[in-house]
Image (cartoon, rainbow, N blue to C red):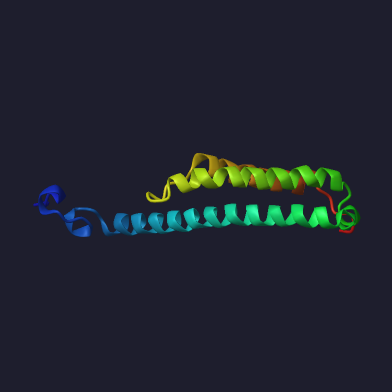
Amino acid sequence: MKLNPEITGSSGPATGETALRHTWRRVVRTVRAVAYWYLWFFLVVCVVAGAGERWDYSQDPTTYHQVYRDAVLYGPITWAHLVLAAIAIPFQAAGWKERRFSAVAVAVFALHVCYAVANRVFGIDLICCA
């Protein structure tokens, strides 16, 4: 005889849920939590690094012109990373209590990954000395 979890008020392997399913749900929750905090870390690092890059470029642009083949192209790329991450942070913060992913934040992360792949394949942001 199976016990109804709504009546008994319990959940887990004793109520008919298999131990494997219970373990799988725990793993999924853990991976989701790690991904959630990684997304926060990614957004904050993008904003801080982008602001640092812009500040450093305004202080001494000759260094960037020595390192990058097209330092003029590098400027809008860093601005785009900075602005998109700064826009995504409030959207991600809106789901803070429920630990929900923001579609905007996930899209910014996906755009960053797509740019990294395209940069690797097509050499968009070339370094002159590599």
